[in-house]
Length: 355
Ligand code: KG4
Ligand code: ZN
Image (tube, rainbow, N blue to C red; front, side, top):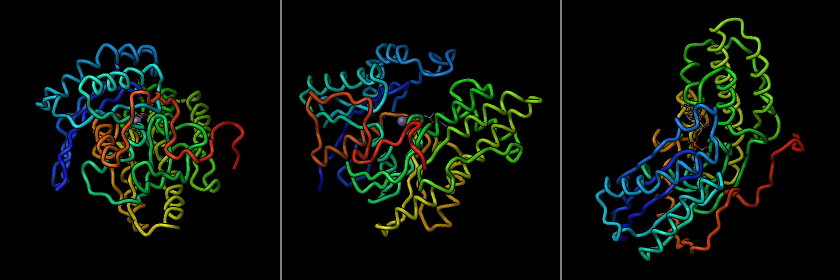
């Protein structure tokens, strides 16, 4: 029988200060003992986006309290922890440094193993907390900073199949929301506004839909949204734009996921499709990708909503998965503002990228 493992996870890569305790029991069952997330929405609201220095200051003010809360809520003796995992990248340097250094300090003071976690690997492995999912699986990672199709063959084993060549999907949602006049954070609210509008009212572009494999682009769509938003005839058109934008995103994801599924199937007989990251909370995107998966004989798996957006349970879990593979780190492990899951994939961002 395997050993029971309990990890503390710490996450401060952007604007959520988070700590969690996750346990893997001897029989392989996993349990989220505590999962504390402190959002900084009120700090950044008046600026319409995340201000790195303010985010870092809020992390510094709250991190000790949040970690203590995770430990107390979990009723855990910290000496019984098997290890500490903290996000080391990618993300905002001034923010990452807070969680990474406190994670190292706790591990050093308790003389426990330390795991430096890639935030994207946290998202990628998050559905494995609640479900038994075998490798390999196709992953669509849709967050505020990243949008990628990946083949996940194991821990630390990722092949990028496609990526956005400009904005991340969450970024596209947030920028569109801002142009419509929806207050920060725009993505989740845009989904609510879309429910009140006509999704066929505005016809918006779908950049590189029929070319570029399963790479994606949202910049042209943003420009079109900007144009429409300058010429609203009435308030109702704001709802129509939210609905039309979301429909266009769903059309793009439907087509591009089909391409990614075909690519994935070339060298894999598995048929699991995992969708993770903050944007995976979107109900209409969930329905759209579940429908496509059924048509393509894939099983679509979404983490529960509280594990889609940034949290530390996914970091603690990634810590456990890596620890079991003996992938622990020493305290010299550097912070990595940029840290792709597939280091061999070419950098595909910027004006020079053409399909
Ligand atoms: O994964 P996440 O919490 O943070 C990053 O790692 O980036 O993702 C945050 C992003 C934001 O852009 C937010 O607007 C978007 O996810 N988001 C949504 C929804 N909920 C969160 N976008 C569209 N619809 C939603 N329901
Ligand atoms: Zn994230």
